[in-house]
Figure 1 (cartoon, one colour):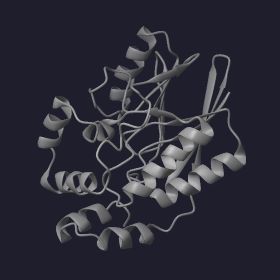
Figure 2 (figure 1 turned 180 degrees about the vertical axis):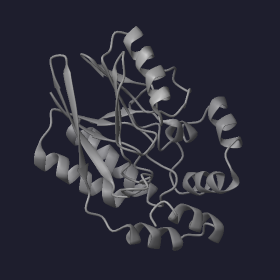
Figure 3 (figure 1 turned 90 degrees about the horizontal axis):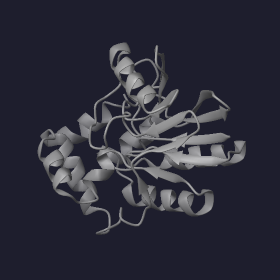
Figure 4 (figure 1 turned 135 degrees about the vertical axis):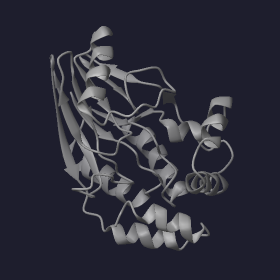
Length: 238
């Protein structure tokens, strides 16, 4: 089973389109979108249209992330929004004003997905709404223990915007790089991934997207977002 995995798009439709094209060219059996379609980037409508196309054309499976929760409406979402820093809340509010009401409700959202030895979710293997990051060996060990307790050998997650592998005692943890907001200081290239599941073995290979970050920064600076928020968002690409 070959799975094309995309995550943390964050309203960057140009790298999303490039990733979809590359995945279709390479071929896959399933497509998995691990959440966070919006916020930070400034192409929300174009992003939603591409994801709708991926769901219709490719049967893409959509996993809900913390930023997806923000636009779907719930008491938990409002509480989460209220706790965000001002610049990030401005990005959320700007995005909400630029998508149709109920625009996120059209998708068939899931909290997680699994296939054989592999468990996939947006952030981690804990309960939905627990948005703890996996950014260290210790955090990976905790996640691996939770995976093993549920009978899985591998975990696949986004959320941290960095491509990493942690070979833990109980299970192997993979985190994927972001399409829309790269955060790896050593590599700011947008990425997607190809996963292969063969029996009890899972491999993950990262795929780079040939994308000029200046395009994204120019689009951000052309919006009505405050200059301070624009600069904060552009830092992720500089």
